[in-house]
Length: 249
Image 1 (cartoon, rainbow, N blue to C red):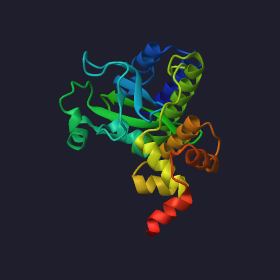
Image 2 (image 1 turned 90 degrees about the vertical axis):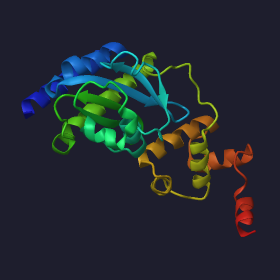
Image 3 (image 1 turned 135 degrees about the horizontal axis):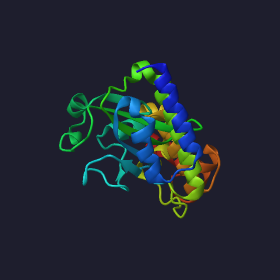
């Protein structure tokens, strides 16, 4: 793999994103054109929905029945992509090695010899993730700049499609908070920072940031203090004084 091939791949991806592709053509172009230097065989791209689950919105190259367009996964599910999104860290390696860590991969008829799963971030918050199956090792340790640029361009594509409804369904609205979001809100009430919450819950800081933005959406507020005040007013959280009294009692 040489720098010229990597730069050409980024140029192809930038051109693809500028064309505002629909979901199927975006995924197929990633595999068949953009990531050809790595012998790409398949890809899956998901975004975090209002319930904090990973919504796989477009795929290409998976065997029939292995992965259909549209499934949603809890971030605690034991897959490389959910792990990458949950922690905010790239997961890569040979499929044989990854199967020992993620046994759920073993029964799947995956194409390729290697996998890389990348969190996709926007404005510092994780908004989704992308998994790519390849014949040639992605070798993230040596090509991090390339893969990070790919993730940034994919985030741009997701943002563009958000305005047209192709990647994200504009009719969806924030529903009730998930148990994880309620737990985060309780920790926010006690004054913990995003970093402290991430450490306490074993999640990536950017994932916590995304959940907090979803909490804001549910409560119709724009700040942590307002979120706590609104949650207490609606009875979602007990007033802080009462929490302290219970702790003393």
